[in-house]
Image (cartoon, rainbow, N blue to C red; front, side, top):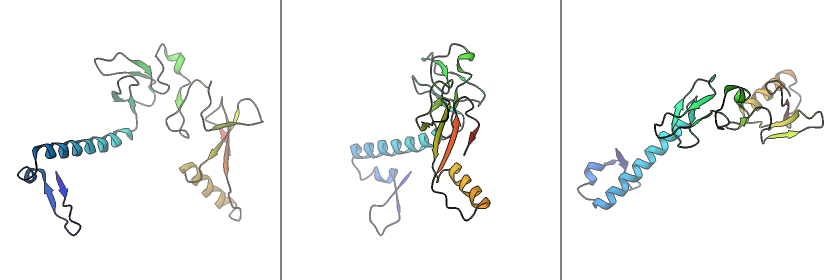
Length: 175
């Protein structure tokens, strides 16, 4: 592991083994601890972005799961958690969690059994099950709709995109 020299004009690397000869053991220990922490943060960010990775709500143990699986059983021998991978509530039986899905538009928020609506959904006047969701124009979904509208009607300027979404039929929507 090498560190860049602190002099602005120098691009050389300093290796920890060479620093052991000149730097105090206490300072060297702090430096090693800092490097270790940065490496752990970097690997943690990589792990968080892994598809299918599910973390235990109790001990933070993580494991990979197939998308069809809803029941998470913690692999930590000191933890006995069995929960839904999406809503994280205690696992009793599969029927209680058949409606739990992760909404792509929300990211990490569970759409739990269609009882609660995600925080970014606003009620409409149309019906009790219809909600409007503002689509971020810079998101993949927003860019896709913008491209579609530009192809079909290039003279129109898009000001905002809203999705009307039904709570019961959340996979189907109208833009």
